[in-house]
Image (cartoon, rainbow, N blue to C red):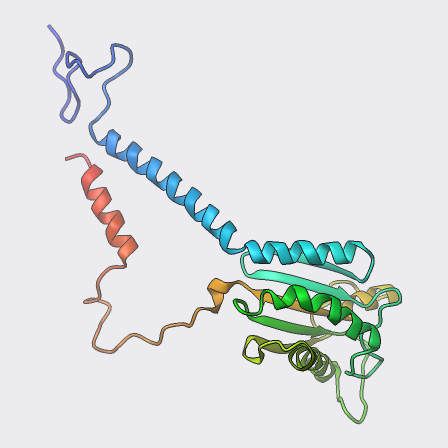
Length: 243
């Protein structure tokens, strides 16, 4: 006499049951289907992300080639926020004279090589130019400290790209960090040269989307509808929960 299957299980005499192994609960079919759909979803999202960032990946590869050819010291990094191009004053490359924010001829030449790559990104991405200095104090008739100097240097780089290379000014910004974000210890001339750098931060297009304003006072959290993603998961879970 065959045993009576537990509630929610298929009888072992059912022709759909495999002769090997235990009978599976009926909700497992929906659960396995959900897992398959989630895997497909994340694969599609990954492929879509790679396609959307193809221009950034191409720009990073071009800049790496320029750095490897020995034109200038620096690094290129791509992360979830965007593309970061770091150019350092090392060797014969002098971006600015000491205590000055005016671009040297070497820096103008470097901007001429870098501009064609950045120009392909300016239509869809914001570009923030960061100025950094070493920790040697400065005080002259124009700048009271390294903070003002680094900000002025970043601003002059932005102005050069806007005036000479016709970059869209609404996509450009400048910020100065002074000596407060070093990448090396300020204990030797070589390390100080690494800290005297200019960083181009090309933000991902997704982060450039305008943010929505505050919610209306008429819609309270209690009466607000659940987010679409949460409501979708609730419907799926209600279908696969055993009764």
